Image 1 (cartoon, rainbow, N blue to C red):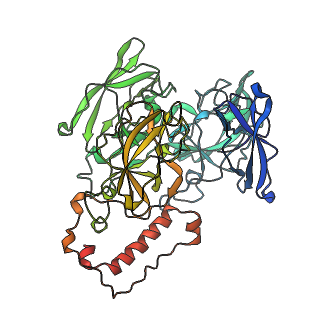
Image 2 (image 1 turned 135 degrees about the vertical axis):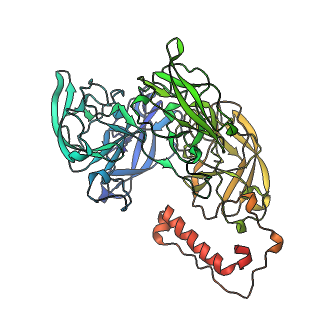
Image 3 (image 1 turned 60 degrees about the vertical axis):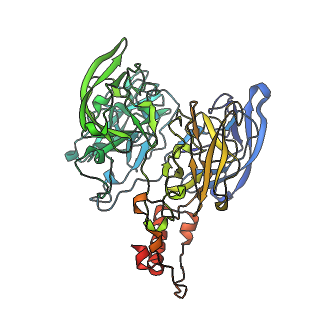
Length: 584
């Protein structure tokens, strides 16, 4: 959701930092254009609301949001704050393919997603107020990408991120009921329905609901989301039919569960897997990386739940095929208070798939072992004509498209202790080129605690493979260090020979300021390399000008469609210029 900087003094020790920076002046209007404002850092021990200050630029934008040109506050520990009382929804409705939406005005296909975990019934008070809803827009509730719905029973006040907690006074509709009207009750000190409004609700295919929320007309009040109603979103990973040996093989027909709260170092969140409609096979991921179930007893009150389910036995080998194992639920003084039988299978690429079933107990969930994380080995392939040599690391690497590595992302518990120094990696950010930062990166960023950056400039193509020191921020910019190898490649990207960081939690960072669009056909498999002795030289008498163009819109905002158009132009020119022997 949209949020802006506070316009009044903010107490120190908030906003995830010590010295809290706020905007000393009002936000501009759209007609004001770009303005300069003083940002003050509050620290009572040093003299009040503005012992530190910097000048930043601010602009108001259509859609009720603001952009800021932030600069370094030049002091630690300090950060820019965001005012929780200014939250408004982002007007950016989720769209569906016209072939899947029966009617464009059907609210099941024309809504705004509210993925706001603080709405959950197990969340504490935050002072949120839902008085910005106007009754004209439909909303779908999500919880970390999973389906969730409003509670159907009285809620305790001072929860759901607010004070007055609104719940649905009546059952949710069936799909056949269409759009219905329900009373939403607000629970407060005098009873379960001290406040009430009428809202519209509709059941949709794929087991979710949409709501036409209205302003509760009281603050602080918010609509709740029932944490016991969570079900996985139906978004199975698909594979190319040419790479899957059989469509019935669960290694190629599964649903991904990229839910970091399942990690064994995750805290209790009252999630219950008995509420999920388990159907088929599932692959566990952790922020885009492989992870598997733990094979030993896990303390209760972890993995986002109370009773923690772990695998009572070792994971299979690929040659074992599909096996059955006992999954045990740990509680209090017993590692196997509850148990169920699940099936699992080892897959090529160092991952596993599980046929999960209901644990038959609440509140319980399947855990993911944070010590088992490994990069996803899923190399991108290109036409064999683009790779000059199979041993060249610029064409023989594993991609790491893991947005949590970005320098703008907050810290977590990722640990890069799985690298062995024997493979090359290319960093991507949502499909775009990105590289390691070349300057000290703040502690507790990049999805980890100790942030590793490249202590020296990246090489030029002419430098070949170079060795650089990678420094980890811990008690200073280079509290830890390892030596890694780096190589610059054509088309403006780099590959790295990462080594294990034998101290946790630590990870290699990706510099958000270095992003560039991918304009190469990314790498090849060694089995597809052509016999270079058979390649015929390109005629110098044939003139086919490389007329590659890019629209002004793409130059300003490079999207996936822009990339597809660019690749199509390159392929068309290649087809004209290269001899048939090379193209084949």
